[in-house]
Image 1 (tube, rainbow, N blue to C red):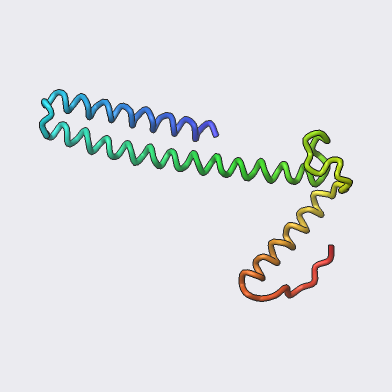
Image 2 (tube, rainbow, N blue to C red):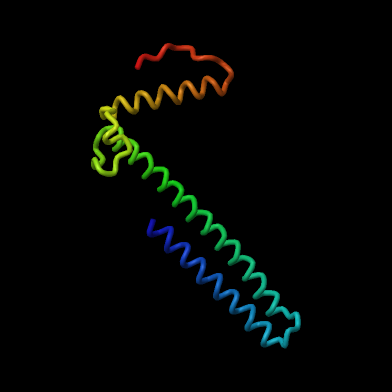
Length: 128
């Protein structure tokens, strides 16, 4: 995650520097279109694209972390590893299950979803 933040920060600083270079080139040319202003604008466009890519990568990293944290919380909750005060199931009378059993049920559900997406009904009988 640190590398993602560093890459985003670096891309941002390069983008801001490129924007400043465009302004400076425009001032030096008196607002006229010159090779220097064109080069500064082209560099600005490239830095903008690199900044957008870095933003997209950072967003993907955050989404991945959110999913992982959510999955870990679900497993902790289902297996009883989560603290009782924060649990969704705590106090509900539902006993915790083993992580292995949770994984087996998750796989069974995934297979059912795949089978349903392909238009076939459940082929195997799943015991719970």
